[in-house]
Image (cartoon, rainbow, N blue to C red; front, side, top):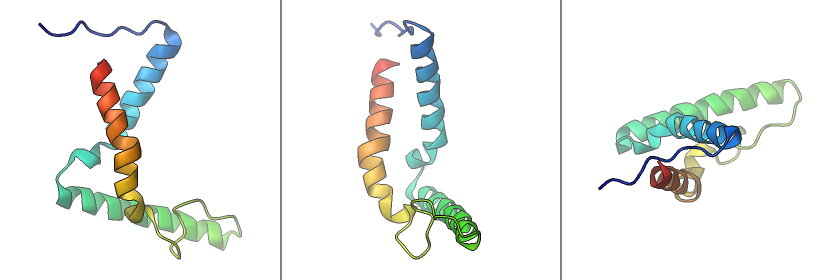
Length: 96
């Protein structure tokens, strides 16, 4: 039969579980089809670049991945998927 449901052992584990579930929902576009995923990645990258432009105009240091003169988030997607998203999805699904 199915594995028994996981129940958090304390308030800290419950909060961490909810935070991870929220992060998985936030990056859920990774599970979409390629066309949808690419469209959202480029929209996210433009949002980041606009913030970087504002930081540059204000004389502030430019946040990582927000500088249009350097590779943006679209260039880091394969690594993000392989080293962050996939392990997070896999482990969360294994527990819950």
